[in-house]
Image (cartoon, rainbow, N blue to C red; front, side, top):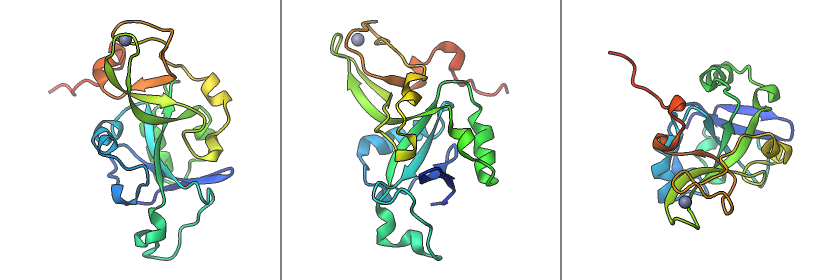
Length: 186
Ligand SMILES: [Zn+2]
C-alpha cells in the first residue's frame, strides 16, 4: 500500500487517489461486499476513499517496514464525498505533491458504503450514506452533512418519507445522466 497521508487538524488520514489498490487484509471493516464495491468506489468521480484509525487519530508513520507490521492493520475504510463539483483528480495531484491541507477537505462529507433496501418498493440499492459518525473525528462536524446535497427519494419508486441520508449511488446507472462517465471518443 502506498501510504499517501494528509495531516488535518486532529487527525491523519491515508488518502487513496483514484484507482489506487487497497490491501483489505489491513482493514477492520473488511467485507466481501466492500471489496466488490471498491472497484466502483475507486473510480467514482465524486468521492475518494480514505483509511483512518479510531484508536489513535494522530497516528504516526514509523520506520521502514512499519506498515507491514500487525499494529498497522487497525485501519478503517470510509469515503469522503463531494457534492459541490470539486475536481477530485486535481486533489489527487495535490495530495501526491504533498500540497493538500484542510482547505481542500472543507467541502466533503464523510460517508460509508452500504446496501440499503427501500422500505416501500423493496429494491436493494448500493449507496454512499452520509453521516458525521462515519469517518474520523476530524470530519465529525455535523454541519458538513447539513451543507451537503443529498438524494431525498428512492430512485426506483420515488418515495421520500422513509429514505436515509444518501449522498450518492455506487453504480452509475442511477446517477443523473449529466454525471455519467462516458468512454473517451475513439
Ligand atoms: Zn423505492
